[in-house]
Length: 380
Image 1 (cartoon, rainbow, N blue to C red):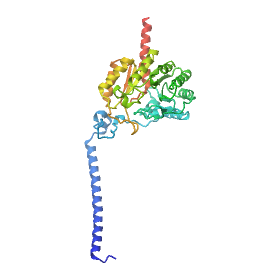
Image 2: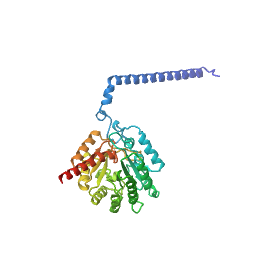
Image 3: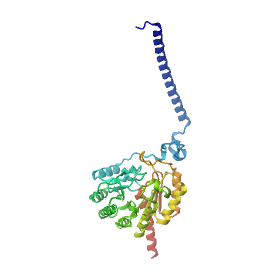
Image 4: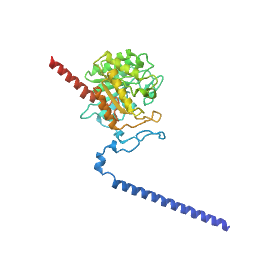
């Protein structure tokens, strides 16, 4: 078949080339893995020992990039933002009840990293859960939020206030946070629905502390008044970010002054009501902008409690993280917040607006109030 000498020579050379190519490929692969092994062995021998690894300061030791550059798509998540998988008896109980009664929680919808910690509680703190009312579709489209959006969400479930109260009163918790999606499509923006839920809870479990994290109600003071008069313990509304980034981060119907006015009006209706707000960091703000925003929140709105946490990008279609703020910066901001008069400041990379809400309320604010009452009684 291959009688021609030239043809046979070409075939032999081709076969030899193929064999040689495979040989060199295998040799290069072996060399590559040997080098990797030697590098790993050297890194282990020259690196920190196990004790140093356990006790090292993750923030100071981290050498990765924390600020997004122009040529980067995303930042690598630093070690201090990694959490354990949620589990535990109380966590499982809450999860089953929520699913059975068709309730929504911001813990799940917003993919909160602290869900296990808050739902389980612990020896030094009480369990806290955050229920989201008025459905799971929001009429707003904030660029940081993972909650679904819709121009015309489904009508509110008329049984939700009663079902929510039933579920909450069956849980082993001492503090509940109620929040809701924005419902610009409703005449009262859902304020009566929220107030009814609070009333049901307080009727069944009067000693349960209720915090309500409300929308801005487009600045409608009647809606704010409806919530304040429902016998809640803490009125919360989040300004979300510094004044300079409001239009970039939040829905166009929201703004800094409107949010401050909501908090101001809540305090005007009931001066003894605890008010609270929250800021996200890592969206491109400066440290001075954060401090100025904190000053305005405290001086203009007389807000009592502030939480500061790291913004985390929920999906690729949301705003990118511009910076991962180091834990030391959060500590500095906490000290600053306390110095300008906030009753309590929760500040840390994993802190969220409802983060361990019951713990700080019970251990700090109520304790302070009791001391003031005792002092007043002794003076009389």
